[in-house]
Amino acid sequence: MNVLVVTGTSTDVGKTVVTAALAAALSARGLRVAVCKPAQTGVQPGEPGDLAEIDRLSGVGSGIELARYPDPLAPDTAARRSGHPLLALGEVTDAVQAATHEHDVVLVEGAGGLLVRLGAGGFTLAEVARDVEAPVLVVTAAGLGTLNHTALTTEALAHRGVPCAGLVIGSWPGTPDLASACNRDELAGVAGAPLVGAVPAGSGELAPGEFARRASSWFARPWLDGWAGAEPGQPSISARA
Image 1: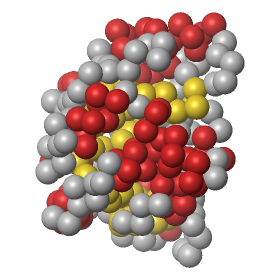
Image 2 (image 1 turned 180 degrees about the vertical axis):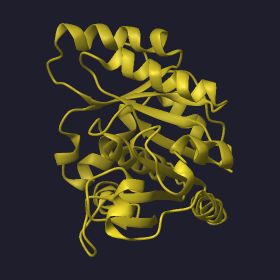
Image 3 (image 1 turned 60 degrees about the vertical axis):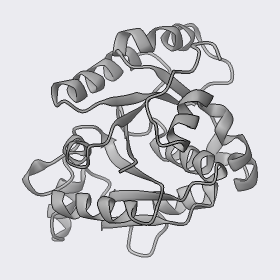
């Protein structure tokens, strides 16, 4: 299977925009891309969620949402509060595996950080990645605190035997401060994973066509080409690219 799981070092670091950019960039290379969002929280029935935003920006309409809960909380907590059934790990892995039969790449976007509990038994995105044998792309912040948060996330992946596909800065400022500039140089070494992309701040506000046109430029070309050729894990983006 050619599956890539997308997590963040925390909430609001740009996972959805990064996932949309990846979907657009891979689709532009002629790949059939599906995006799975196992659990959506903080959205009412019928309201547009993260998959709708990914579709709007990327034009990739193959979205898979398995559960949605109205409270903006961790999915297992939100499920219990709403009285809805807890999502099961097998539901997620079955849906991802089914999507691989009709798509070249399946992107799986988590909720919040790596160890947020998604459903029954307290399973997390790390268990999803493990069971579908997929690497995890970590979306990071640019500013203060990101070195620690990113290192904790990659260490948690390594502890579970789940490979890290690389790091992407989810919102790179137009005028980086000293901390952001230093962090960009140091993230790969501190986290033990290559920096493979940086998405400019405000990219989610671009018109969809312009977003899709620019998306490929936000990732290291060898890494992106590796995914397009079903050979993930290619060289990283330059720290100053």
